[in-house]
Image (spheres, rainbow, N blue to C red):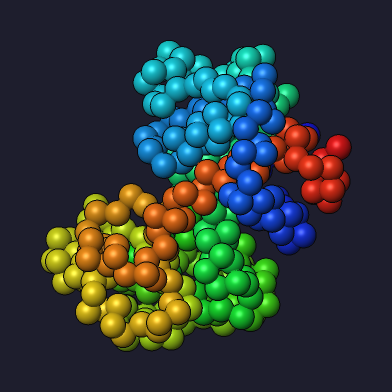
Length: 315
């Protein structure tokens, strides 16, 4: 049995198999419609979610499986004081696999220590979001035909954005990756990411505060929301917020083959006028999330084609 708590739980080879399987599912959905017949996915979401929870549920339903779970801590026995450990022991009696989102960092890892079914981290605090990272990588590969020799721009809330942290750690394993980190000083990438990932692995990176000054360097622009509540005073927020709104004028500065990703939801950081730009890939990215989660469920349940299951170390 294998759990996915962070993207690095899969090696590069295993990640390749996952993405290949997701591509096959996208191209041949009919082939997978009954493959999870009789299997149950538990979705334990202790904080709000739209895309992640519904894409997990869609993934299982697309494969003929069924779902159970809850969409908020208040609607579970957590409101009565039940621990994560006890909840997952109980859920292990009802389901075959579990996707868990929790506001506390490390909660899915705790669950994995007490579970008798595979646990998938669907986001824990400001820490990790592995299935979003696999989705991002599938989209990057589809658009650029590779996941190496790329300049990746990450823009917005880089301090608290778990999608950013997971993506940096994953892409740092590929050759020729360079990061451009675009954020206000208050929301820069945490020091542990800089020191333990980028500097330790000699990954080239630059930090910038203005998107328009660096957008022409990028192969991929990964937008995130700048959160007003993270600023110490409103003046700093007002001073900086408009620097991180991607609009048609800023897109004119970008390369013709630069693609825009966003984990969503967006507020105003991408103007709706960008949606019609052929370089806007964030809604395709959301669709890819279903295929990636279908592939991951199959691999963890041992239902993937034999060659991919063996390659990923699950028998």
